[in-house]
Image (cartoon, rainbow over all chains, first blue to last red; front, side, top):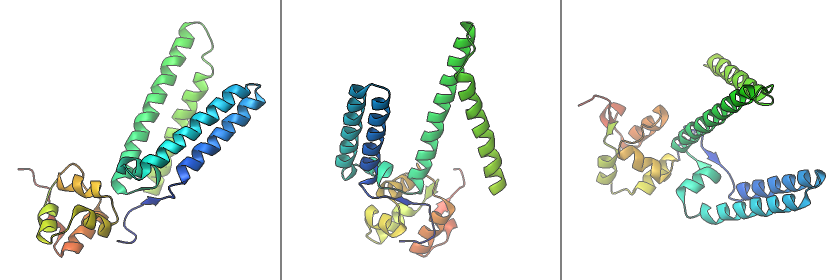
Length: 133
Length: 65
């Protein structure tokens, strides 16, 4: 193994299932507080099942392993591109939804705030990464 | 990018998994480099060249045919 070469990420195979379970519990509590316990239980079951599927597939698929327990420089690059695609899709959706709301004669909320946050986050990230070189 | 990774690896009777383990990357990454689908980072290129005892210029060819 070569040291100090790539920013490889190594996690326990239990990290992602535990994260799914924790998120399911948060959904359960939020739904319970909102008076929708049934939806919360459903959310917890779905998240737990998703975590179990990931746990079962981690040892069989290099792709799932890259998403869960560890990633090398190539997978980190794939992850970065996939994140950019997801972010772009989200931003485009927000902009379209904002325009639709305006065309309907509404204020455009909350899409105007979401678009502003996305734009400011992008500018801040560009400034930060440029400063860091 | 054209490279000599597969040639050098097979000359030493190494499996992709063995080279991957030595480099600290996945077997898929070595496979992608060999099939010219992925251009490795400079640190990984240097590590591969050092591992096989050749220069980076010998291992990787950035000249278009």
